[in-house]
Length: 274
Image 1 (cartoon, rainbow, N blue to C red):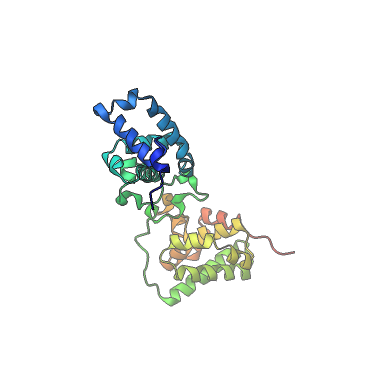
Image 2 (cartoon, rainbow, N blue to C red):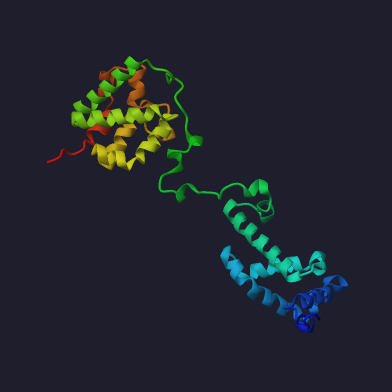
């Protein structure tokens, strides 16, 4: 059966063979045709229209995709390809993906093409998140050097009782304080660090609702029990938390004389049900 003559009679650059012929002509004399040939401008306008949707998909301008097509069209492999337009399309697609990744990674397009760099996630600014990165990211955390890795069970029980007594003396309902503190201690025992326990508990909305503790009072309780998460307080008494201070032998009367702890607890007493 004879081959259709449609493709062979279409000599415009919109057909694969027409594009091949035009590229061969444009590359003559060291590529001088790109500057002088009137059809070169029409080819670039067609490329901008052809790849406009692909460019928008990756957040680019259509003429950026046309520029990627121009770079590909000057390659000898495009002129030798069975389907030059298919090769150009693939080259533009790869470039658009690399451009998008480069913007996210804050690096050059050349680096974004390399697997070593493209495997990373997009860069994030501290202001991009609702909660400051300093509050929970382990890279910004330091642990006290005097943490007892295996406190005795009786010391833990005594620390919990003293913590409940402290909150009760400063106005918290006894039963609500005990239930909340015991829950915090349970979650702390299953966490790799105080900082991770703090972050998990701060986001534990179901537990807060079941314990009937308002958000501000709940956050204040976590700061008092586990220590303030700000790295600036890491090596201070307020940053260590009263559970750790009680475990290392600090008496309850010392906590009652700590104005910062007293103000934090007394200033966030949950309202009693009426």
